[in-house]
Every structure is written in C-alpha cells, then in structure tokens.
Image 1 (cartoon, rainbow, N blue to C red):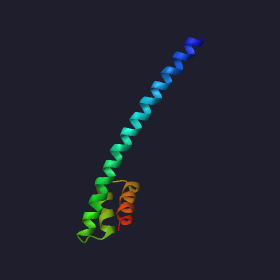
Image 2: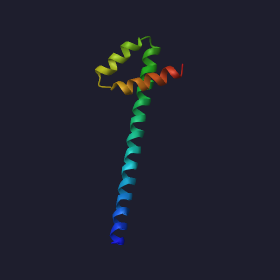
Image 3: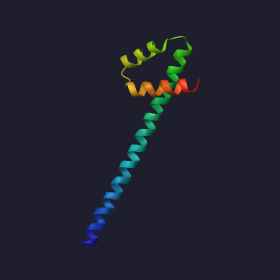
Image 4: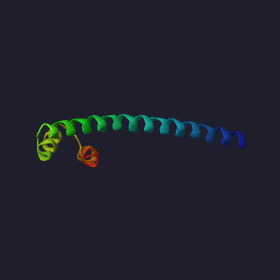
Length: 79
C-alpha cells in the first residue's frame, strides 16, 4: 500500500509541477501582451489622442477592461 501511495503522490507532484509551469508560461505571454498594449497606449496618447478614445478603440478591438486598465495604470504611473 505504501508503494501505491508513494507512486500516486509522485504522480500528483509531477502533475502539479507541469501545471505550475504552464501557468508561468501563460503569465509570461499575458505580460508580453500587456507590455505591447502599454506601449500602444503611450504612443497613441503621445500623438494627441484622448485616453477615452484609446480605451474605446481597444474595447472595440476585443481587449478586456482589466488589461486596458493595467496598461493605462503603467503608462500614467511612469509619467
């Protein structure tokens, strides 16, 4: 019984490690998207577009509010 339990827990540990690795990769991809979005927000505002125009454009193009908010927060935090 002990060997079966050890095998089961070992398998669960490997699965957990794989899931954590996948989550980390997904977070890195999302971070890249947010960085690109942040650059876009900064560039369009620097060109003279009003922040509300930029937000509306991003929403119409499928960006989620929390991603837009994160990008704007980073842009205005750096100003």
